[in-house]
Length: 385
Image 1: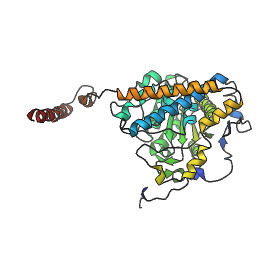
Image 2 (image 1 turned 60 degrees about the horizontal axis):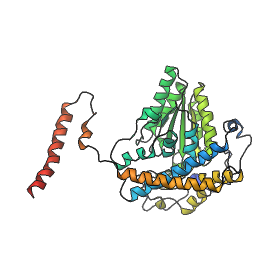
Image 3 (image 1 turned 90 degrees about the horizontal axis):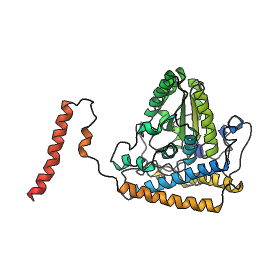
C-alpha cells in the first residue's frame, strides 16, 4: 500500500464538510445565528441548562474568549522560537469549555495535548501548560491538585488510564465520574477500543468525550469510520450522542447528562462533539496542503464565540462595557503568558536521571557519569581557547 504525500495531495473536503441538510442526529441548543433551540431532540438535555443565569452565560463567553487569547499567544510564542511546538484548539473552545464546566471538582479528567480550555475550567494556570512545549518540564502541574491529569502525547492511551481510574472509583464506592478526551483520529486506536470494552463490561463511570474536529492531521474523518463516530458506542453496549461541538450550551448540557448517568451507576457514555479544527494540527503542520479554503470558511460561520455573543446581545445579557472589559482582560492575559514563558528557567540537565528507579540503578549511575563527562568536555574546550 502506498502512502500519499501531503506535499503533493490536492486539498479536499472532509466528509463532515460536504454540502448537505441539517444533521438529524445533532443535539443543538444554539444555532450559529445565536437562536435558542427547543425541540424533541433537545428535550432530554434542556433541564441541564434550564436554570442557567446571565452571569453564568457571560462566564462561559469569558472562558472561551480568554482560552482563545491564550491559545493565540502560545501559537505566536512558538513562531517566535519560544516554544518548540504548539497544538492549537482554535475553533474547539465551545466543546472544551462546555464539557469542562459540566464537571464537578471531585471528577477526574484525562486530557490529550490540546485540552487547554478544559485545563482552564479545572483551574490549571495556563502558563503551566507551556513548560512541556518549551522543553523545561514534563507537565508543569500536580494532577492531584485539580484532578486534571498531565497531557498525554501517545494517541489514545489516556482512554485506558481513564477507564482504569473509573473502575477504581466504582470499587471505592465513590460517586464521582471520569472524563476521557480524545480526537477522531484516536478513535481508530486499539487502546480506545479496549477502553470501550472494559468500561462497558465493568460499568465504569466514565464519559468518553471525542472532539471530532474533522481532521486527524491530514486524514479526514471518512478515513476513520464508515458510520458516525458516536454510533460506535452501540456495539459496546452503551449510548452515544452527537452534539454540536460549536455550541457551548449543548456541550454543557449533554456532558452534564452523561456525567449524571455515570454517577448514578448507569455506566459509560460516548459524546461526539462535532466541531472543526480551524488552525493547523500543530505548528509543524500546514493544513493548506490537504484541505480547501472554502471548507474553513464554511466553519468560520459557525464560530462558537460569535454564536454565544449573538445570543448574549439578543437576550440583553451583555453590553459593550462587558465586551470592552473582557478585551482588556484578554490582552492582560496575553502579556502575562508571554512574560511567564520567557522567565521560565532552564531545567537541571541532570534531572533526566532522577526518579527513573525508586532506589537507583547501576546502569543509570553509569549513564549519569558518562553524561557528566560529556558536559565537562565543553568546559575543557572553552578553557583551552
